[in-house]
Length: 94
Image (cartoon, rainbow, N blue to C red; front, top):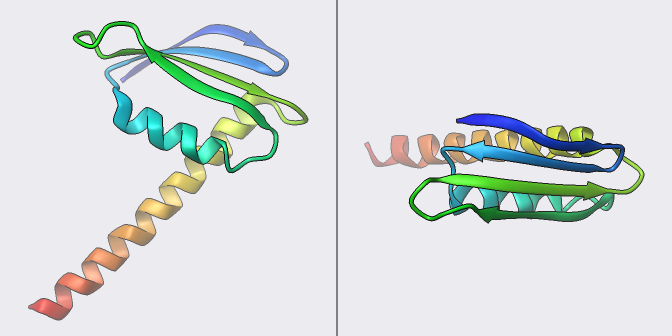
């Protein structure tokens, strides 16, 4: 995955992300909208065959970088919980 900052302003951030598709972007947008400071979290695929995403984040009261960092931290925490749950369930079946 390669990330390039296309636009960076006080409450507005646009990133160009290579190597991703709807899967990660939907998860990220969903988690960002759990933050009241996030006004817009959206993305577009430049072309379905290139796997290049333009990601846009607009906030109020918090920097987009902080909102993005908090959202990714929450996603990692949720995935760790899911991993532990899977491991627990699989151990019970052995």
